[in-house]
Image (tube, rainbow, N blue to C red; front, side):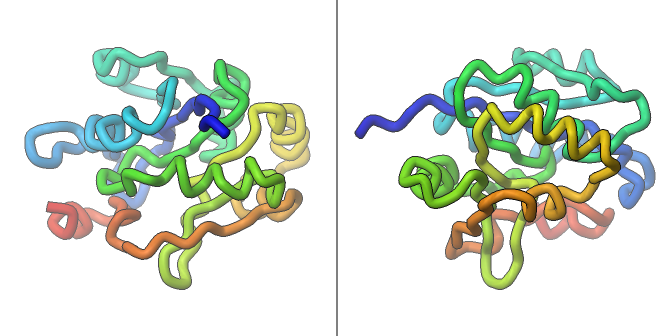
Amino acid sequence: MPTPPVSAIILAGGAGRRMGGQDKGLIMLAGRPLVAHVVQRIAPQVAEILISANRNLSDYQALGYPVLCDASPDLQGPLAGLLSGLRAAQHEWLLSVPCDTPLLPVNLVTELLKPLLADEADITVAQAGDRRHHVVMLCRRDLAADLQTSLSAGVRAVHAWQAQHRTLAVTFPDAAAFANLNQPDDLARLR
Protein backbone atom coordinates (compact mmCIF):
# COMPACT_ATOMS: atom_id res chain seq x y z
CA MET A 1 0.00 0.00 0.00
CA PRO A 2 1.51 3.36 -1.01
CA THR A 3 2.05 5.94 1.70
CA PRO A 4 -0.55 8.71 1.47
CA PRO A 5 0.61 12.32 1.23
CA VAL A 6 0.89 14.16 4.54
CA SER A 7 0.68 17.87 5.32
CA ALA A 8 2.70 19.37 8.17
CA ILE A 9 2.19 22.33 10.46
CA ILE A 10 5.22 23.77 12.23
CA LEU A 11 3.99 25.44 15.41
CA ALA A 12 5.83 28.74 15.89
CA GLY A 13 3.02 30.87 17.30
CA GLY A 14 3.89 30.86 20.99
CA ALA A 15 4.87 33.79 23.16
CA GLY A 16 8.22 32.26 24.18
CA ARG A 17 7.73 33.22 27.83
CA ARG A 18 10.34 30.79 29.16
CA MET A 19 12.81 32.20 26.63
CA GLY A 20 12.31 35.80 27.74
CA GLY A 21 9.78 36.50 25.01
CA GLN A 22 12.07 35.51 22.15
CA ASP A 23 10.46 34.02 19.06
CA LYS A 24 11.89 30.51 19.43
CA GLY A 25 11.62 29.58 15.78
CA LEU A 26 13.89 32.48 14.84
CA ILE A 27 16.65 31.78 17.38
CA MET A 28 19.82 31.03 15.46
CA LEU A 29 21.49 27.61 15.56
CA ALA A 30 24.52 26.95 13.35
CA GLY A 31 23.83 30.11 11.35
CA ARG A 32 20.17 29.37 10.61
CA PRO A 33 16.92 29.89 12.51
CA LEU A 34 15.64 26.85 14.41
CA VAL A 35 12.56 26.68 12.21
CA ALA A 36 14.78 26.24 9.13
CA HIS A 37 16.33 23.16 10.74
CA VAL A 38 12.84 21.76 11.40
CA VAL A 39 11.84 22.41 7.79
CA GLN A 40 14.96 20.59 6.61
CA ARG A 41 14.11 17.54 8.75
CA ILE A 42 10.46 17.21 7.75
CA ALA A 43 10.46 18.42 4.12
CA PRO A 44 11.54 15.02 2.70
CA GLN A 45 8.78 13.34 4.73
CA VAL A 46 5.74 15.44 3.79
CA ALA A 47 3.95 16.77 0.72
CA GLU A 48 3.06 20.16 2.20
CA ILE A 49 4.52 22.43 4.88
CA LEU A 50 2.55 25.11 6.70
CA ILE A 51 3.88 27.38 9.45
CA SER A 52 1.76 28.66 12.34
CA ALA A 53 3.10 32.01 13.57
CA ASN A 54 1.62 35.06 15.26
CA ARG A 55 4.52 37.53 15.02
CA ASN A 56 7.54 38.17 12.79
CA LEU A 57 5.41 36.93 9.91
CA SER A 58 7.72 38.22 7.18
CA ASP A 59 10.64 36.27 8.66
CA TYR A 60 8.61 33.07 8.49
CA GLN A 61 7.24 33.88 5.03
CA ALA A 62 10.84 34.24 3.82
CA LEU A 63 11.16 30.46 4.23
CA GLY A 64 8.80 30.07 1.26
CA TYR A 65 5.89 28.26 2.93
CA PRO A 66 2.38 29.46 3.78
CA VAL A 67 2.22 31.17 7.18
CA LEU A 68 -1.01 30.88 9.16
CA CYS A 69 -2.04 33.03 12.12
CA ASP A 70 -4.30 31.81 14.91
CA ALA A 71 -7.95 32.71 14.36
CA SER A 72 -8.17 34.01 17.93
CA PRO A 73 -5.95 36.94 18.93
CA ASP A 74 -5.50 35.74 22.53
CA LEU A 75 -2.82 33.07 21.89
CA GLN A 76 -4.75 29.94 22.87
CA GLY A 77 -1.67 27.75 22.69
CA PRO A 78 -0.54 25.03 20.31
CA LEU A 79 -4.07 23.71 19.77
CA ALA A 80 -4.99 26.98 18.05
CA GLY A 81 -2.06 26.56 15.67
CA LEU A 82 -3.03 22.94 15.10
CA LEU A 83 -6.57 24.04 14.25
CA SER A 84 -5.25 26.49 11.66
CA GLY A 85 -3.23 23.66 10.15
CA LEU A 86 -6.14 21.23 10.10
CA ARG A 87 -8.28 23.82 8.31
CA ALA A 88 -5.63 24.71 5.73
CA ALA A 89 -4.10 21.28 5.05
CA GLN A 90 -4.49 19.98 1.52
CA HIS A 91 -4.05 16.35 2.54
CA GLU A 92 -6.00 13.97 4.77
CA TRP A 93 -3.20 13.62 7.34
CA LEU A 94 -1.52 16.42 9.29
CA LEU A 95 1.79 16.19 11.11
CA SER A 96 2.30 18.70 13.92
CA VAL A 97 5.79 19.62 15.14
CA PRO A 98 7.14 22.48 17.26
CA CYS A 99 9.50 25.02 15.72
CA ASP A 100 12.25 24.32 18.25
CA THR A 101 12.98 20.62 17.60
CA PRO A 102 15.78 20.66 15.00
CA LEU A 103 16.76 16.99 15.35
CA LEU A 104 13.47 15.25 14.54
CA PRO A 105 13.75 11.65 13.27
CA VAL A 106 14.00 11.15 9.52
CA ASN A 107 11.38 8.38 9.82
CA LEU A 108 8.94 10.41 11.94
CA VAL A 109 6.04 10.42 9.48
CA THR A 110 6.48 6.78 8.45
CA GLU A 111 6.36 5.55 12.03
CA LEU A 112 3.52 7.83 13.18
CA LEU A 113 1.44 6.92 10.13
CA LYS A 114 1.57 3.12 10.49
CA PRO A 115 -0.98 2.79 13.35
CA LEU A 116 -3.28 5.35 11.72
CA LEU A 117 -3.37 3.45 8.43
CA ALA A 118 -4.09 0.25 10.37
CA ASP A 119 -6.99 2.10 12.08
CA GLU A 120 -5.49 1.49 15.51
CA ALA A 121 -5.77 5.16 16.50
CA ASP A 122 -7.15 8.58 15.54
CA ILE A 123 -4.02 10.39 16.69
CA THR A 124 -0.45 9.19 17.08
CA VAL A 125 2.03 10.92 19.37
CA ALA A 126 5.81 10.59 19.48
CA GLN A 127 7.31 9.07 22.60
CA ALA A 128 10.96 8.59 23.56
CA GLY A 129 11.74 6.77 26.76
CA ASP A 130 8.98 7.53 29.25
CA ARG A 131 8.24 10.97 27.81
CA ARG A 132 5.44 11.72 25.39
CA HIS A 133 5.96 14.64 23.06
CA HIS A 134 2.31 15.61 22.69
CA VAL A 135 2.86 18.37 20.13
CA VAL A 136 4.69 15.93 17.82
CA MET A 137 1.61 14.18 16.49
CA LEU A 138 -0.12 12.98 13.37
CA CYS A 139 -3.88 13.09 12.94
CA ARG A 140 -6.66 13.30 10.38
CA ARG A 141 -7.64 16.65 8.94
CA ASP A 142 -11.30 15.85 9.70
CA LEU A 143 -10.67 16.40 13.44
CA ALA A 144 -10.84 20.18 12.84
CA ALA A 145 -14.50 20.57 13.88
CA ASP A 146 -13.92 18.53 17.03
CA LEU A 147 -10.87 20.61 17.93
CA GLN A 148 -12.82 23.83 17.39
CA THR A 149 -15.50 22.55 19.79
CA SER A 150 -12.85 21.68 22.37
CA LEU A 151 -11.18 25.09 22.09
CA SER A 152 -14.58 26.79 22.44
CA ALA A 153 -15.14 24.72 25.60
CA GLY A 154 -11.87 26.00 27.07
CA VAL A 155 -9.57 23.05 26.39
CA ARG A 156 -6.02 24.36 25.96
CA ALA A 157 -3.79 21.40 26.87
CA VAL A 158 -2.78 19.25 23.92
CA HIS A 159 -2.81 16.07 26.01
CA ALA A 160 -6.34 16.84 27.26
CA TRP A 161 -7.64 17.10 23.70
CA GLN A 162 -5.78 13.96 22.67
CA ALA A 163 -7.31 12.08 25.61
CA GLN A 164 -10.74 12.59 24.02
CA HIS A 165 -9.66 10.42 21.08
CA ARG A 166 -8.05 7.08 20.37
CA THR A 167 -4.49 8.26 20.84
CA LEU A 168 -1.52 5.95 20.55
CA ALA A 169 2.07 6.73 21.53
CA VAL A 170 4.67 5.58 19.02
CA THR A 171 8.06 4.92 20.59
CA PHE A 172 11.23 6.27 19.02
CA PRO A 173 14.59 5.00 20.30
CA ASP A 174 16.48 8.30 20.33
CA ALA A 175 15.26 10.79 22.94
CA ALA A 176 17.77 13.36 21.64
CA ALA A 177 15.77 13.56 18.40
CA PHE A 178 13.08 15.43 20.32
CA ALA A 179 15.39 17.85 22.14
CA ASN A 180 13.82 21.29 22.14
CA LEU A 181 14.45 24.80 23.36
CA ASN A 182 12.54 25.67 26.52
CA GLN A 183 15.20 27.49 28.56
CA PRO A 184 18.10 29.69 27.42
CA ASP A 185 20.59 26.97 28.50
CA ASP A 186 18.96 24.49 26.11
CA LEU A 187 20.51 26.22 23.10
CA ALA A 188 24.01 25.14 24.18
CA ARG A 189 22.77 21.54 24.46
CA LEU A 190 21.45 21.63 20.88
CA ARG A 191 24.76 22.83 19.44
